Structures are given as structure tokens and as C-alpha cells.
Image 1: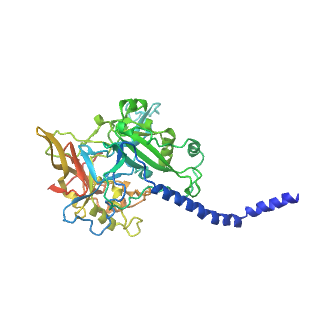
Image 2 (image 1 turned 60 degrees about the vertical axis):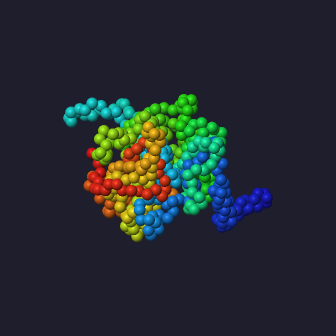
Image 3 (image 1 turned 120 degrees about the horizontal axis):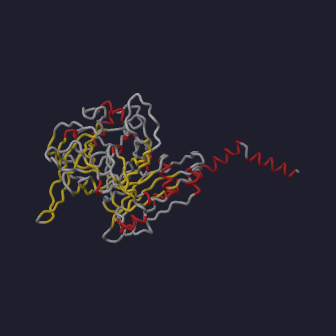
Length: 489
């Protein structure tokens, strides 16, 4: 009896608030240190790469590292390409390049894929007289609709890596700098615990760990691959110790045999007003990984990944070049135009106009605006009047063989802005107000776009194939006023 009483007193002693707090104070810092060491080790390990492929993109410092300098201009006073970005999956984190191939529909690999959710709506019956009572429809129409950071800001934390076949037959990094880059912030798993309930997360935790198939697949035979990573937090995650990095790998140019084995489907995909046919490649994604991604993004409907069908690209129908009547221009999964350009001075001027109370004041990151070509060497909003420019080289072929010449772009219109730039690209957190509120007060400069503010320019390549490099000079061939033509009347 004395032993039992002694044990009870001992248990009461160990579970007293004072003792529990002491244990937490002693053990907590140790666990936190272990977590920091794990993260540091994870960042310190050099990726083994993809056999037979080379990675496209900068892996160290960003050309935008100096974007907040007082005078983001070129040394000779001419506008120049300061940085280049592509976004292989629409609204996901981009890949910075030193050199980009350009096609008539945009930069190569830019917005080639998009996530989409399945939405349903009642089928509209024949119109009736206003006096008739509308009967509820028993039929429903199901359609895939693209998703973006506008509604799912955590897409900003979905990182992408591009690996393309290497003729040298070994893994390497291409398109990088020679040692003078600054680090581009990577996604950091969140450290705090959150209770999410025991529905989907509980099922996911019981599922198998998502494996990275990069090492076992012959990705070079499929045109290379796109590696997608995102952080997933299980239901119980003390000190962030159980945060998991989920990896998905998708081929860039799969063989017909692979497409059949992975059950690719051609389906209609809704993107704004367009409904092009695109290839559903969701069969490439492990079901557990897909469920984790859906939960991570906060998508309740079925989620899928679509790739562009090269034969079903959308037509550019607005703000076309007047000197090329009848010529057709195409775009992939970008909102409306192939290539977006933005002056860094314009971003800095917008930053200066933010209210002092804004969290982003003094550190407005140009990456929020998701341009392809960031321009230095011009005054704030100097790009507003561009009508036709040359930048980089066009690569063509005639009877004498290959040739190079200046690459011309039609500057179609200003970029009408929504609230997407309110999303912090490093955290995936969407600010309620800025910078959109300030843009709404200062940048309603285009009557055609009203009531939307504008920042940056939309361009169309006037050639089939070309290249653009960081440092290339931009020559303005024509200037003038713009009037935006709206997508929706």
C-alpha cells in the first residue's frame, strides 16, 4: 500500500505545472536545436541531380539581389535585361535564368503546366418567360478550372526545378553564374504546430511516404523532367520536427508509351474565357502526394495537373500589332500574353508610394509581379510608352542556312493588375491591402483597363525562335500611347 501511495505522489509530482514547465524549458531548446541542425544539413547537401540531365537555372544568387539599390540602372544608361524568370507551373515558384530560349508563344518552359480543380455547376436549360417558375436542374456540368495564387496563395511555396537532357551524358547545372550571386530564399518549413482535425491529414499520415523517383527513372528519354517540391505538415508536428518535403517528378516530353501507361487524358480546361483542350497528366503523381498537395493548398475539390497541348494553344485576340493583319499569335497558360516585362524602377517607385504602416514598405519584392523580363536602366514607369522593342537575338533559317538578327517584340499593352502581388513569394501569405491598394490609388493610368491599376507591359514575340540573355540591351523602336482592351466586356 505504501508503494502505491509513493508512486501516486511521484506521478503527481512529475505532472505538476512547475515540473512540466521545467521539463519544457530544458527539452524544448534541445529539440529546436536538433530541428535547426536538420534544416542546415538539408540545405548543405548538394543535390545528386538527375542522371543524364542538367539543371536549368541559377542555383545561387539572384540577379534581383540588388533590386532595392538607390539607382537600379545599367552602367551605360541604356535599358537592359536585369533578370529573367520562367514559371514552369502557373502560379508556382519561378526558375531564374541567365539565358532563356524564346518561342512565339513565350519563353521556353514558361507556364507549360497548371494545376486545376474540378468545379461543378447546374446545366442551364432553355430560357423561359420571366413569369415561369424556374425548375431546379437535375443535371450538372463538371469542368476543370485552373487555379492561381489569387485564391490559393500557398502555390507560392511550391518550388520547381527544370532538368533537361545533357548531351554530355552526366548531371550538371546549366545557365548559372560564376560565383557572384546572392542566395535566392528557399521555402522554409513552418515550425509551429497546428491542429487540423483528424480527417484528411490523419489518412495522409497513415499513408506511405512519398518517394522521389528521379533516381530510378530514365528522365533523359522523356525530354528531361520537372521536379516539384512543397512542405507538408502532419497533424501533430511539435517544433516542426515532422515537417516533410514532398517531391513530385513529371516528364517534360514523355514518350507515347509512357503517356499511355500513366493514363494521360485530353480534356477541356477553363482558363478565363478560353476552354482549350489540354493534357491531364495527373497519373504521374502518386495518390498520397496528390492528397497532401490538395490539403496543403487548401483545395477541397479534386485536383489535377495539366500540360499544354501544343496543337491547342490559345489565341491572342487583343491589342495585336496593326502592321501584321491576319497573323495569328498564340499563348500557353499565361493569363493573356506571351511575355511580361517590368521595370525595376517602377517597382521601387511603387514601394516609395506605400503607406508607412504597410508591412512590405521598403522591401517590395519585384518577384511579386511575376514578370519574365525585369528591366534596369530606365526611369520609373518608363516602359509605359513602349510600342515596339528589340531585345536578344532572333534565330531563323533561309536559303543560305541559319542566321541571327535582332529579335523584335510587339508591346501589346500595359499589364492590368489584380491582388496577386499581395502574396509574399517567400511565405505564401497574402496581405489584405498592399501593394494593390496603393496601385489602385496611383496607377489607374489606362482608361481601357479601368478600374484596374496597371504595372508592367505585355509583349508578343514577332518571331518563331530566339534567345534573350541577362545584360542584353533593349532598344525602343516605337513609342506611343496605349489603351487596354479588356478580356471581359
